[in-house]
Length: 181
Image (cartoon, rainbow, N blue to C red; front, side):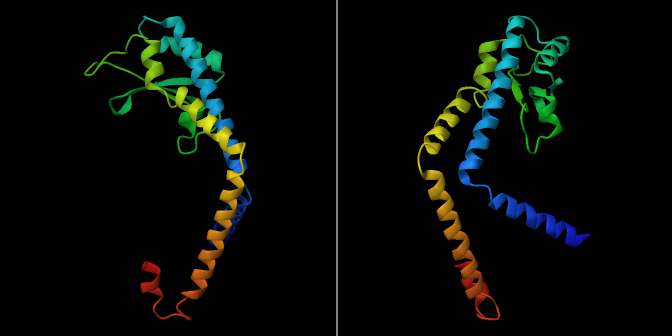
């Protein structure tokens, strides 16, 4: 069993290493675009309830529009509107995974009134900040920066391997002190 885990971990690291920086940036851009689209769709659906109390009865309408379940999470003193894709895989959120912060007046124990401006401002990470990050990614993708990063990572890996070889205990009895340097 242990050998299987080691083999799987080894395959994962080889697989991860075979993905170029350009591919990673492109994948991050696509995922961010998806999160932005999902957040906008939720906010546009909530716009129909502007000025009305946010209740759990609104959720089926958002679920119908998104095509996935949406819940209100009021844990830890905050209120979040979360998609099923988010709460099913919080550690590695994929497409459609969004957790929108819903501003609630301090000390309030009731659900708030829908205020689109406040919700938009509180969730910039999915909206304008996401667009800004994708613009910076596009600039990187339109240059040779991803390939330069790959070259530097390869050089770092080779240097690390050589350092490991040079400071191996069998070769160097002071390996512990040298590795701390």
